[in-house]
Image (cartoon, rainbow, N blue to C red):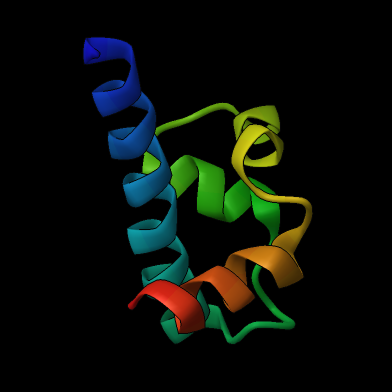
Length: 64
């Protein structure tokens, strides 16, 4: 059960970081690496939760 909480926390951190990075640099100016850095995760970790930067944006609209 704790593993699921950690996964959800990491996914949430990525989405929160994406909001900040998109607001600062714009969608097209933002990179997955910048989102990962802002979330405190490795670049590849983004792809464990999302298919692409576009998918991150779509999930933001769905969930936030």
